[in-house]
Amino acid sequence: MPTPPFQLDSPPETGSSQIVSASSLTVSLPRPPRLFYRHGWQSWSLAAWTEPTPLPVQRPAILHPLQTDSRYANDVSPHSSWVGAVEFDDDDILLLGSLGLNAHVWLKENLLVGRHEANDCEWFIARGNESSVFAKYAEELGKRFGAKSDKSVPRVWCSWYSLYTAINEEILHQIFDGLNDLSFDFLQVDDGWQMSIGDWEANSKFPSGMNALVQKIRSTGRKAGLWLAPLIAVESSHLFRGHPDWFLRDESGSFVSAGFNWGEQLYALDVTHPAMLEWLAALMKQVRAWGFDYLKLDFLYAGALPGKRFTDMPREDAYRQGLKILREAMGHDAYFLACGAPIIPSLGLCDALRIGPDVSGKWEDPRDATLLYNFTTPGTRNAIRTSINRLWLQPLVAVDPDVAYFVEQENALSLEQKQLLQDLALICNFKATSDLPQWMTSAERESLRRFLNAAPQVKQLSRAKFQLDNRVVDFSSALALPNPPRGPTKFPAAFLGWLGNRSFALNMFHRLNESAFRKKRQRAEIESSK
Ligand code: 9PG
Image (cartoon, rainbow, N blue to C red; front, side):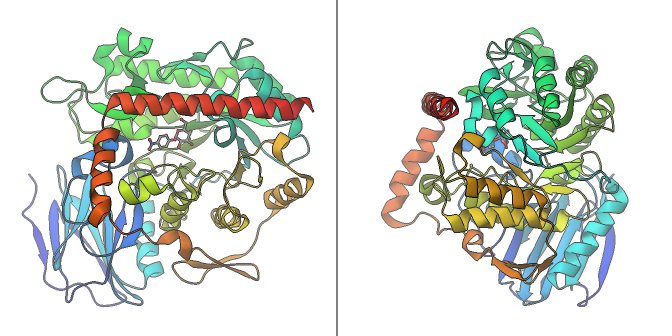
């Protein structure tokens, strides 16, 4: 039985903290805060210090399951997953964070409210400067969810941010050869190798098969990494058609949407279904048997969506149980990067965690940022903003801010913007790129080489400023949020939101992207043949 709401009439003294066990709790604020820290549910969801007022609901709604915690996406009061904080003054921050799963924090006028979805849980409340309250919170989380992985963080070349789905065996071989003297530990094949989302076998662009691809990677002196999204499937996959009973449904028996991507409806696997779990474990073993030692498991949020499961249990507990099975099956010696993953429920089970949205060769898409008020879509500004606001996770897990860029070709970022991404990677100590050797000038190749071998002393000076050795880096340009749509822009914004909810529009968008990716590959092929 959940206990009645716990009320704290005044927050703790500056410099102190306390732990309270309750299903819900309210903390009265002594005065109106000037900022609220919102922590998004999964890797791609927004984490930011914002005004303490409601923000517009991000659009399109069809993507809520894949970009936010859909259950709370329409909340009017500012909402945060597991942990929220308010700022009264410089160095006067009040943090309320749960030490368990399935918990949420809201700012409701002069109250900070914490609520668990099912049971009691422990709540951590602390007041003081930002770094100390978050450090203490992280320490308590570590005691409950497990210590940080002791594996060294690998340097990774990832295929996604250059060729996207347009990869094939031949071009990857050329790239792997072209990276010859650069000190990558892993060459990671991303989305584009599989038959379908759900059908995890090599497609016709990889006629020699996955084992041969691993052999090629190993022949260059590196280890092999692979991307999979093992907890979702598209409607057209054999997996979904063959095993509808393995998929998550709601109370009325309809399939739960896991969002929309690849021009299709996505569905979520039920991570408590015994036959499904057997299939999942066998899949992990298969991937290891092909020879992949680094697994980027993506779209993991699907395991924790609300729904009715084979075994009834709180959704994030179900996810965590599923993740343990994945981890056991892949083996503890594999390097496991969790992506699109609910943050707190992934701690202690993965080696690294993506802490922000995807980067892209663009700083910001005004359509997404200003009209749709969506900060989860690919874009370098979005990626930096959320990642900077999640650095407090560093004592718990290796944090992946996504790849950095070095090349000018096929990339619209300024030198300064690329430098911010590189510096963020150094701060996180997670070094990855997707840049093609075909596109690198010799100077760019040199700067990539220096980056891969760099290990600067990092010191945080303020929310936006960091010192790297003797250099100060300022991320302020990435942290601010654009103003919500106002006045005449409200109409195109509403129309775009409507259009974004239509599957025909998303489908058309997908086809355009795919054709742009293929053209990119053709340009890379021409460069290789020079
Ligand atoms: C492969 C990619 C890459 C990338 C992942 C993930 O619609 N969305 O909001 C959305 C966000 C991210 C995303 C896809 C869709 O990218 O983060 O690194 O692996 O999948 O498809």
